[in-house]
Image 1 (spheres, rainbow, N blue to C red):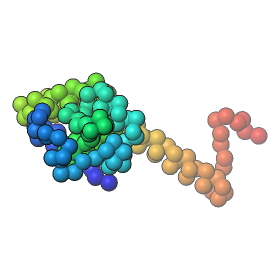
Image 2 (cartoon, helix red, strand yellow):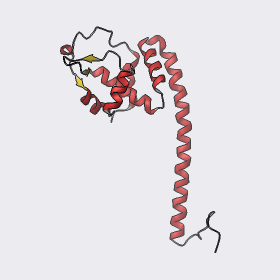
Image 3 (cartoon, helix red, strand yellow):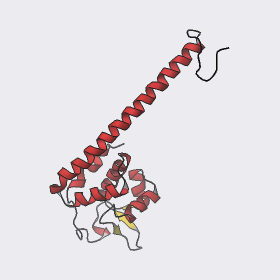
Image 4 (cartoon, rainbow, N blue to C red):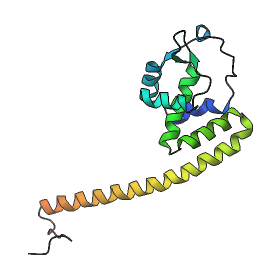
Length: 160
């Protein structure tokens, strides 16, 4: 599986301007919705929702008016999945996209957004780590009770 940052690398550049791709025929690699979903790991419904929310700019349409994505769009969509897992809301992802479309001048604002999410993720990680430590301790306690090394004591059941 590709790392999230690999998919986000292209987000800061204006790799495409509107009208750059004249038609689907000019695309070196075209992805249908299904193929884009398989490539990105998103469900069809999620990708359609992202498109409808304007999170995937410059989406092309084929002759049957179905969405078609190029490699850049698929890489961006992978980045969207990572941003979502980082805790960005749809509104924040829209804001981030808007900043990306401004080009390099908005990098400081993007860094600030991501730094705030990083802090929140670190806090969440600390909570998860503490929960795992508790489970490990409790499993060890149960192992010791079952092995006869420790007497069972419960806060819920009074001693017999």
